[in-house]
Image 1 (cartoon, helix red, strand yellow):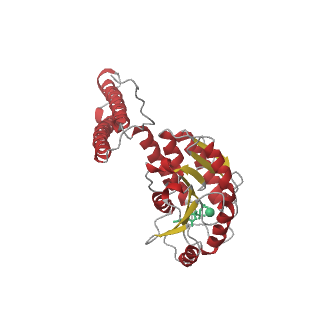
Image 2: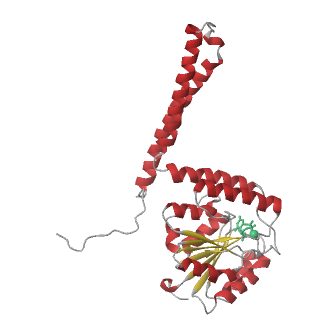
Image 3: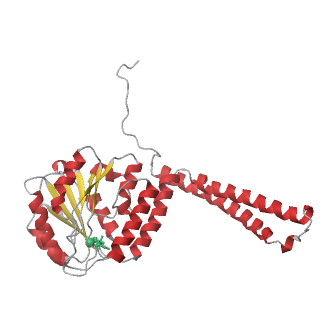
Length: 324
Ligand code: UDP
Ligand code: MG
């Protein structure tokens, strides 16, 4: 096996019960990459309960390019990808689905695009072969929403086939279903992201692992991501802002209560006025918001300072040659 320095590509494949798809996928990758790139393939067996591991062991015996990481149980596709990224040695990292829906023949085009000067090129499954109601429609809506909220203009965040420079993945930690947000996170730290239409094929063997529930998870992840991207180093701005709004609301409705009691001709009794309840609620909410903001500020400081994480990303430091 080539040593770590000169591996160009690491192909990372999360596998959950895909026994019937693996050999064909492996052959296709070899057809595309043999003689063209120095590469390695990492299969992550994410707790498969079918024959997948046996098939992987067989592939492993016949190839020095392959490594297999076996999880103790099913931890999910994002965890599998994360483990693959962590152990990859190549300069370029390419995740692929194990079910054969992504086409390895697209890899060279994606790499050409990357070499035009990008850090990430994301696959776009323009003609997607999946169930319309459980996949295509929810995914269309989710993609629009993600693009609008993160400000990263991609058509298809969910496509596993993407091409990353290994350096782009180093800083990124993944949770939940967040692998689809890597381009957004990377673009936020200044990486250049592009996309390219890729082939997408129907799943011919094995069963799809997700249903509609994934869309809900993606939307919840999106809220987290948006919060982290916009306010992770200054949470008091959002919580404090809400707190101040609540105080303003409380003052308005409190004034209205007093006005209706003492000044207006109606002389409405305060305890019959629902606005009094609103005032009390808003005062409580404002205290909660501000305290939550302060707690979040402490958490953020612990997070950054305990891990020496800077709040910025430096590209390069320039220094004058003529030192005094
Ligand atoms: N997968 C996994 N762990 C899981 C679920 C899925 O490793 O808990 C793998 C699965 O084997 C496949 C890929 O993730 O290689 C994508 O899964 P699937 O084809 O079911 O979903 P799609 O993204 O195509 O809708
Ligand atoms: Mg699939």
